[in-house]
Amino acid sequence: MTKLRAVIIDDEPLARLNISDALGAFPEISVVGEFSNGDIPSETLAILMPDILFLDIEMPTVNGIELASRILATHQHTAIIFVTAYDKYAVQAFDLHAIDYLLKPFDSPRFAQAVERAKTNLSLISPYLAAEQLKQLTHSPYITRLIIKTTGSVRVIAVDDIRWLRSSGNYVEVHHREGMHLHRTTLAFIEKHIDNSIFCKVHRTAIVRLGEIKEIKVSDHNKYSIVLHSGDNVPLSKVYREKLMLKLTGISMV
Image (cartoon, rainbow, N blue to C red; front, side):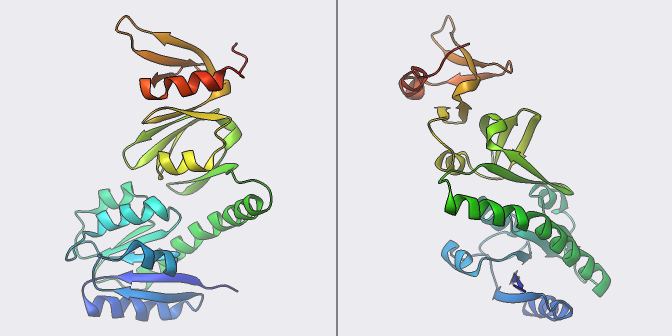
């Protein structure tokens, strides 16, 4: 059985030792890296590929919240457990969909609870990731679904059900047939991995499915916008207008 990979980042040596010792009760987890601050090259994290990250918050050079945000931008399925002496960052931590927030000093039952939460979260995600990766390697260069972590669950949204996407800070709004979900990724990443014969970027913050376009409107101030069959209005910038019109020549407008 493949072990889960854990990385510990804390500027206090004793804190790192306490976490490492506590993980001794979990033979299914292997500590693959320990660091004394958050100034870690992204290449190092890519090599270590942590499943679980134990992360302090107040550290030299890079704040733990900032580091977590940076890591999740490229490793969105990493289970992050904050371990800190301060409770004032809890809201920010859970905004990042942290698995848990441990206050130092923690006891063994509380630590075990956090680890079990991480394991449960990863067990929900792993089958979908494995299936999707295999399908993409053997069949298509494009993703066929998005796997979105929400509080207490994992949502699987088929790309076929996506109407449009909008960048929103550190997230992307995924507008689909059943509503809208926030996905912690970048619009650039999604654009790179979806079929651009079906989708088109129409604004620096928006991508639409071509078949969802109902009409293109022009305001009195020569501002363009797209009306979708869902009724949503999406801005159309001049930079992307010509590209969109070329793509629409092969689309039957309803």
